[in-house]
Image (tube, rainbow, N blue to C red; front, side):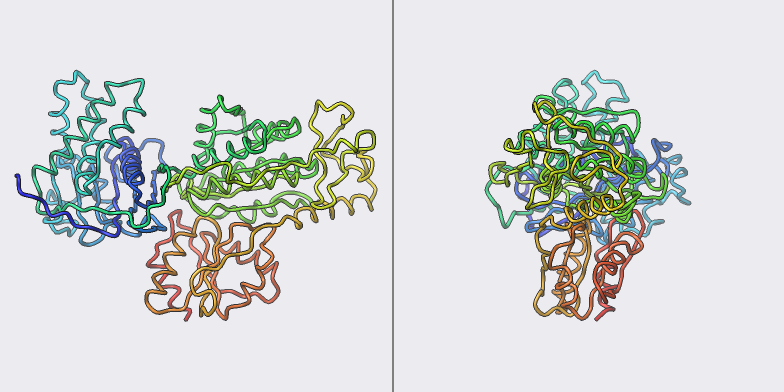
Length: 614
C-alpha cells in the first residue's frame, strides 16, 4: 500500500515482549529500550525471568518476559498492564495475557501455535483466540518463523541459527508500530556482534523485514504512533540497567578517590552482572576476583581494603548470611568496605529471579555483637550510579563497611541515563594518617570531627600496624579484654556511624497539607510516586517520603513522620521498615501495606488500598 499513514502522538505506552527463555525477549526489549532512550524518551523496564535454568520449550513455566514503559514525560514504573503484547508462542499467549490491557494489540507468531504447541500450553481447543476471550481484531497473527526463514534463505546459516533471529522480526514490527529509527538498533547489533559481523547483519536484515511487514500490511489492528519527548535535557543518554549503573558508580568513586577498585565476589542471581561488568574494565585499574565462596569474596575485599583499595563485595540475601562474619571483621577493624546486596525472593533459594525487600533487618542487625553499619537503598536503576558513588564515599571517609541495597527489580530493570560529568561529583577524601602524627600514631586514633579512625595504608614507613578481629585498646591498639575499654570502643564505633551526615528526608506532593503520607524505601519509589500522582489527580491531598538513607536515618525523620495525621508504610516485605521506624521514633504507629509476591507493586492496587485510608 502506498497511502500516507496517520501517525498518532501518544503520551506513553507499555510494550511487553514474551516467549521461551531462549527466544531472546530480553535482547529485543533491551534494544527497543535503547532506541527509545536515545531519542530522549523516559523509560522504565522490567525483565521477568523464569526461575528454571531452562524449562522445556513451549512450557508454561518457561516463559520469559520483558516489559518497557516509554513516556514523553517522566515515567516512574514499567507499567501495570501493557498496550502491546508480543507472544512468540502459545505458552506466552496463555500466561502473559493477564499483563495486557483489554484493548491491547497482540502480536503472535502463528507458526508456534500448532497442535503440539497448544497441548503444551494446555489449551482445550484449536481456537485459542476465542478460548482466551480476545477480540481477533486486536491480534496481529503473522507467520513470523516462516518469514524469518524466507528473509535468511540465502544467508548460509543453519536452521537453529536462523530461528534465533525470530526475536528481531518482532522487534522490527514493534519499531514500525512506534515509528522508531532503526539505525540505533542496527548500531547496537553491530557493536554487540562486532566479532561476528555475519550474525549482526543477519539480525539487521530480519529487523528490517519485520519493519517492512508492518509497513506493507497496515493491519487493521495496527496504528502508527510517535512518542515525542517533552522535556529534553541536553546531554548524552544511554539505556542502563541498575547493575551496570552500580558498577559504573563504583568505578567513578575509585577514580575520584584516586584508588584502585577491587571486587571480591561469588556469582549469585541477581547480582552477578556487577561482577561481569566490572571484569571488563581492567584498563581502568579495576581488579575483580571470582572467589570460591561468599565468605572468601568478602574476606578478600577486607584484605584489599587493608591494602588501600576501594573494596567492594557483591551478593544477594543468601550471600549476606555467609558474609556476615567478614563484614563484622571490617566493623571491628574499622576498614572501608561496600557490601552490595541485590535482594531477591527468599528465604533460602526462594525465588532467585524475583524481587523483594526482605533483607532490610538482616543488613541492619544480622551480625553478632553491637555491629553498627550504614545502610543505603537505591531508588531506581539510574539512581544506582549515584547510590554506589555515595556508598563508596561514605565507606572511605568514615572508615566503615556500608551496605547498599538494590533488588532484582531495579538491578535488571533499566532507565534512560544521562551520562554524568565526574567533575560535578563531590570529592572523596579518606582520612589518611596526618604526617604530623608520625612517631606518636596508634591504630585507633581518630579524626576529631567525624570520629573515624585514621587510615594507614601499608607501605608508609613509620605507620606499620596490626589490625584483627579481637577487641583492641583504644589508646595502644593492643589486644584488650578490659571491660571499660570494650564499652568505650563499642560506643565509639556506634557514635561514628551516628555522626554521619546524610541528606534530609525529602517530601514530595502535597507536603504542606497532605491528609496521607506514603512512606517507602528504595526501589518502590517509582510505584509509590505513580500512586501518589493518581490520587492527587483524583483530588486527594497526598505526599510521599521515600527513604534512601536508612542508617543513620535523616535528621528530620521524626519531624516528617509526625507531621501528618495519617501515614502508611508500603514495603515488599512483612513490615520491616515500619518495625524499624517504630523502634527509632516514639509513638509512631503507621498503617502498613505489605506484599511479598516477588513482583513489583501494581499501582492500581496501591491506589485502591490507599483510598481506604482517607
